[in-house]
Length: 505
Image (cartoon, rainbow, N blue to C red; front, side, top):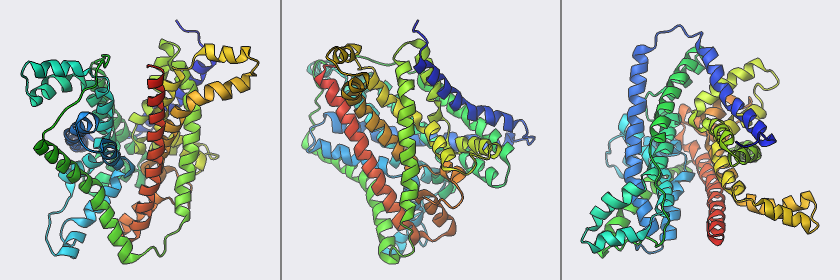
């Protein structure tokens, strides 16, 4: 059994902080005396239904994209990978905004071309839009699993006469099911916690109902709905935990050779996905910018969005260090890490509702940037813990001892030995936290100080007011800043991969 260290103590404090919002919700829900059984059935059906459809769509797109960008004989595979990962930089509510405005009677497509197109609304429209912006989760997780696959198994099956579709369905996909399941879990959590996309496209889900209750000052009812939503999230996490993990050593890289026709069809499919997820929103927002200009836009909105997200990224990486250190030191630390990283499973509207109540009880926190940053940290801590833990696991105590024996001070040994090894994980994790905090809407709406308007809150107010043209500049700026964060995240992951390869890991 590992010795209980200072990092275990810090990790335990973080775990308690993550569990505190759930305890607050339980206390609040005790005051809810309204029978929600009929409403709950409808909300469960809508929430689970759109989640299942989104997961199915994301898997249907993400798995072929993973195979194509990892192992197929496509030209410029790295460029295709970058383009297909780009929807991660586009919040799904921006896509919902674009589809809401472009399709249907009086939409931008009909206005510009005269062609009547059906509206993208409700159940199907919500699932479609969320699929377009969540499939990269499945693609990246599946690619990571594919990198561990031994290509000799596939070659043996092909030499025995198995066709390529049979090999993919019966050999390749079953061996990477853990990667697919991991990506599908992220998609499911995203779909359950997405607030703005269902709201914009007119679908009642738990998230939308919680926000309506909050606005009606029904904190007790909002808390009860939040706990019911958390029960659904826990159910999804339980299903994912039962998926086994396949591990094997890749002795030979898998290569899939496609014929000219199959390669053309695959690239056409990829172009359709990119046009639907990136090109259409860019064109809609570009039309608005051309038509209405940038007049009236407050440049401080970009700074108001960036600096709380940057503070959250720095604090989250700092908090992730002891959690990651405890996790690699034994079973107790791993359990503390699991509890400390439950925040990503708590939807933003739920976390925001609980912390709002905490702020109402503590005047020094209410409507402060500190409370907003706390919400970001508790929600997105898992995004930093993973990359940092991978780096902490590779820290060799012998290297620090050798540096000390050569005359280095403890601080010098830390800065010259530990920091370079930790930096790639810190960059990747911090950039991902910044990316998510920048575009987080529910927590920002609930916890921001009065008068602090951000790009996300501006987009929401524009939607509520119906002045779509004013969404062009904040929407495009949000995409641009998120893209920079995505580049930093991928560069940090590339450094991790390069160091693993150089060390034979």
